[in-house]
Image (cartoon, rainbow, N blue to C red; front, side, top):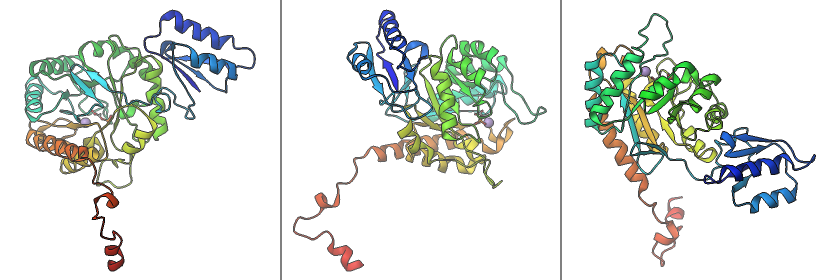
Length: 362
Ligand code: PEP
Ligand code: MN
């Protein structure tokens, strides 16, 4: 059970709820405050008179039975979809959001060119890695804080907010000072000190949480819970493929997780077809498929000169490809927004027998 407080509940009212839960008598289970006291998790049933008192309390938004180990991330505790605001943009709103840019910031010239191309192609946010989690310590590791400054400047110049990965707790606040969205990479999805740190970042920033490449959906939502429990409600999930057995693609894109997550969580869901496939020829079809599956948007790697990319060159798409992808995404979303055809019984001529054709064919 979770007791969710109203967002406008005063500190006094919050303290009163905490007191009610703490002094409910020996029969009452201990209540654990979450997200700085915005909700309380209760691990066993509450006495009926306390339930009635809480339900009638003006500071309580709702009491929700939560049967999953994640609470704040669950749809049961938060029935309305979360829309994450980044400047004027809403992630999880009515329009699909496209995050595009190079795998890594390589130089001022490269990131400036990428930013212009992303903007022209219709992307909404600019991505670029400054701190790169590379499998080999001998691979290009990114330009670090200098890369982040270049990314922030390039984004500002074209009017796009920027998304970048942070890999260490000690760097969370310096990165948050320059980036609009903090990315947690697949390899760090269960780096719990890092998850707590982005949950407490100053300034607070939305967090794009990529799925670990061998993480179950429950583990992923529990990673989101770490961030939410620190009091940061702006978590965006990003599916980026899970490890498979066939080397033809880098990973296996788990698109079923998109509609599945809709029922489990209120958090927005993005898909990254670049790391999921590792091949530029698959980025467009799988990006479009992700939108068809109901994703709130895409994160894609685009490089102004894909073949020259210092990291992940094989999966980088060109600015022209990005323009095509944006057009296809918008077309698919528009098609999905079309009201479904009326059921057969309403559409059919009332004088004809709707089963006649089936019978004849069968
Ligand atoms: C990235 O998006 O830059 C990245 C490294 O992706 P992932 O963490 O999904 O491998
Ligand atoms: Mn990459």
